[in-house]
Image (cartoon, rainbow, N blue to C red):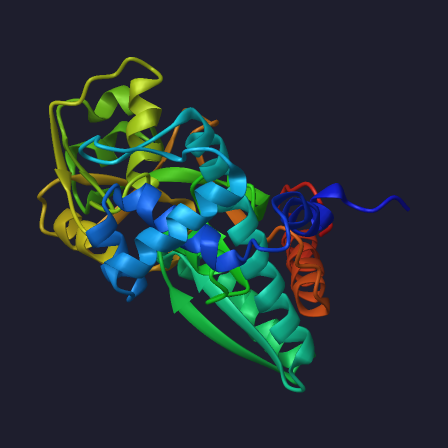
Length: 324
């Protein structure tokens, strides 16, 4: 089987740069490029400013090009600097992947660190974790609640090994598999006037209502998926309230402060003061996305993905199987 060219990018690029180039030069350069200021970059890197300036100067001498437009405020990259920045980011990401995966291979104990968005706890994630622990009890599992965007960052820096999120966001260093599309439903206060319209609602029925969306930050998030469902249909809402998290949104619904669009699995959270209704728009869904580092094909991740598909098959949940 031919080798993946991306696996050799780091070595080939370092060879191109020459033997005097080190990863720390890339880290220093990226920090200055992102901070647009040597003083802020030196604080970020925990080094003094004069040595940082010398390292950047050495880098430019090695490359025989100017990477920064001297005298610009804030500091700006040259055309060559922008090209170098894009590739330096990729190489640092690959180096972080290599480090975390090598550390995993070198460990005697088997571990799996999982990031998840809160809404997946109302679906099949708890069942998946229970069954994985039962079938692979030699693997130590740790769970970490975090947003999809936080999961992407945590995967890249090695803090987690796999993430369960909802936002479609592409990153060259992260492999993302859409496990399934979960229907969205409407959460209303029990006894709300709309509950008398039948078993289904149309998004247009919610125009006069106060829509409660979550999370307020960071964005993009599930809130943007909900808002897109309306904007894609040219539906303009009269009032929107943004809150930090799902539980607050449901609490406000129970207090008759508005309605919320939530994943269908939330019906498993029984409350006497909240009712749920399905939407007539069948394609109003939110994905559940399995994310791992691009080159990570560890045994534990393969076992977890196969177990998920086994559960989906048993539950007769529509999905498309992919392998790592």
